[in-house]
Image 1 (cartoon, rainbow, N blue to C red):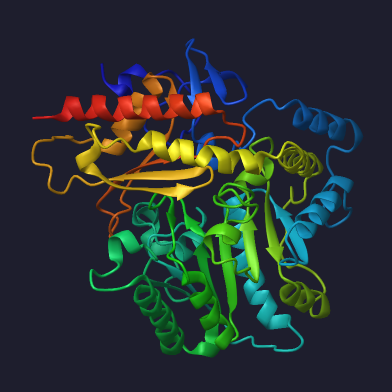
Image 2: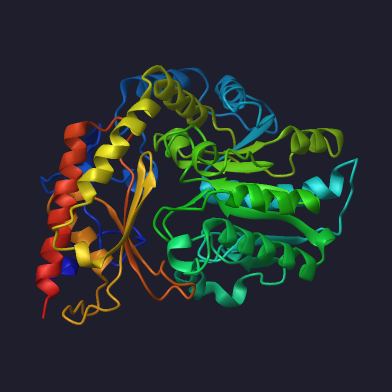
Length: 461
């Protein structure tokens, strides 16, 4: 029976996948109960979202209490206590990196607002007023959101393709990805590779006109597009040096990799040379999936520029700084801190890595790389020279994702991250909740290995 027929059912929802997904009935911690009777272990938190798992009592109570007090106010008319408290917490825990923040409803909206904020900074900043700045530079094999503007900033071919003739190619430009395993030359040292990328960025600044660049944008750790790819050591320090030299903004997208996912509160603290950005987006692990929320964090330079210029953030949506969403996110962050969960993330990191690396495993000849850190891991496969396998019309990563679900494990499978054209590569992503136990880590590794090996046996010719 095909996966399509097995999971088909009547639905009025316009789903994001050709397969009609099973329905979740209830959930607790990292386990989700489905309507069809299955119980699955969530090893990826949706898309790196559910950092506390489901049904944490403190978060649920905080949301209930907030609904009883104030369920909604419009942010242009009134502020609310959870938003004020959450903002204070995010600033106070940033080690001085940030001075102000704004709230949105998710990652795409956070990045969309940052694109607008960057322009606002240079239009209104009283000390440097440079309205001629109009260009952004990002990287190939990146993803920054699913609106037309954020897709223009992104360079994930499979997501851009349906809307190619609508994307803005005049204001959004791209340089090479920082992906040493694939693109560092055999005769290059890590330092030489970083210098080549630094020079490429500076050359792009110069070709476009240095005084026309608003900012350079990068994911601290690339997420779904390439499958958890950190940059080489020294990369972000080098990129920021170019931005500083020409007065542009250094912007980090930590929608996936931020708020503890890498084992530190901010990904740049452990995987970004400890270089703080001028502006940063966070979302997924901010609210842990309990409510839709994202945030834009700004340095004192940017915050002061806005306050001393136009005086306000020129971006607004109806549900911005929603009281219940902010109450949920505040509770999530308080739980992470009070239960010392980032220490658990760092503790379980080595166990997960060890569980995935088996030299005698059937998949060993096809594993190109296992990488990541904290609670965010990617396994990339390469079948370039595999003449004894026939995957038909369904990619290996999707087959493994489907098989894992059958075996009771939720993971993410993606393709197209191994070349700039987006036509090569299979990778699996794991992003378990910060509450994950040693026993669950072992179960995740065991079921994933079983799923991979069963698929390889099925496609062998």
